[in-house]
Amino acid sequence: MFAYWPASAYYYRGFVVKATDSQVYVHYDDGDNRWFDKNYPKTDVVLDEIPQKRYLLGNWVLAATEVEDRYSAGRIFEVGDRDDPKPWAKHSYYVQVNGAKGYWEQFYQIRSLPK
Image (cartoon, rainbow, N blue to C red; front, side, top):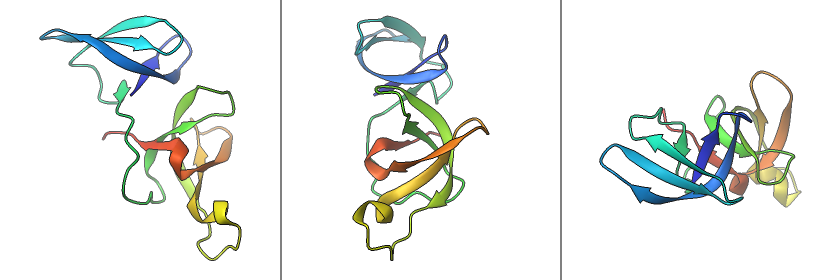
């Protein structure tokens, strides 16, 4: 799963290692830990599942950034060309983050953000 880290405004990989009736305890890959209230916004903890559907223009997603192990929330602004002979182009998406710069990302580096 991916969990939001407010101090950096990025998402990082982690695992839920404890749960109570009202909270989940996330252990991040780098060794940090954090409790999340189960009433947290749905976008604070994102399951690491590769969707079976293709993304559409305007979809909100979580995408890998240029910095290893960091992920950001963003929107799909362009879809790769299915007729392009380059294999990567058929499964790539242009993701714009926070209205700022965008970048092309491969399908397997993107996760759906809950609504």
